[in-house]
Length: 105
Image (cartoon, rainbow, N blue to C red; front, side):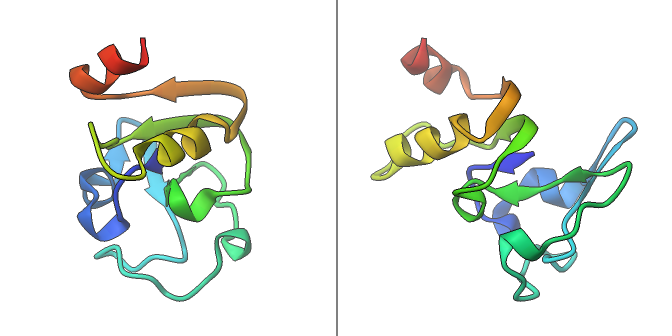
């Protein structure tokens, strides 16, 4: 799961459990603050879903990516969308506010 906001501002990170899926990231404290690990050094946790910000995931890929908490507008929105939308190698799920979804359609 890639978020368009920082981990400290993320509702998804605070909630962390969605049905059987549990978000994890050993580079983050429970409050979303960083432990200082680079994104590529974060180990995969079996049976858990990696949570990361779109900006920190730049240059990396996963088979399935779920994009959440995307802003409707902003100075670097196009760059954020490009990075987020190009991280999935097999399947991409985009959960966006209606205003952004209309803009992307």
